[in-house]
Length: 180
Image: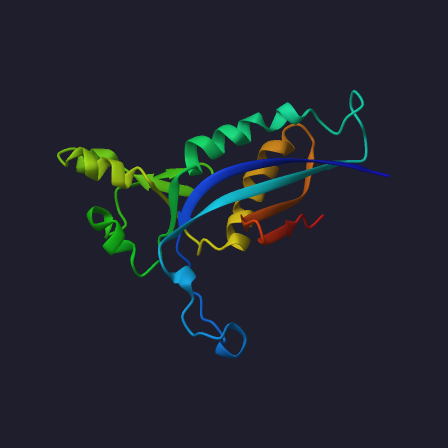
């Protein structure tokens, strides 16, 4: 026997799926609109599992408050861009050489603002909106990335993340499951 709990989080983000190729027989067009810069009201549902209850619960829902803070501070109203996107240098011209980026513990990069300290405020505002990853930001890849972040943190209190659902829209979602 085991128990499972889940908690939902919402955040707004933008991305571009630059690598997608559509099969015209199924999609009825050859170019995906997801190749364009666009945004979503995303939702992530985290499922935690345990075969033992502590104090009558899998864990307190409050043990996911850190994740809400991560979403708010890192991803909400940000544009997730693959460092290998052919438009990277166009969208981030001051960083087209892919140097002067700050690597963060949770597998993403941001720009080093000291490299553009003489630029106008609007340039700062533009660059603070980018979260740079090393994968095409599809819902499958985003959910996998977030699951790794969540599991690493939950390991510290002995809680298993059984799966993560990521809704790109109310009607389109991906699910990634734990392997163990």
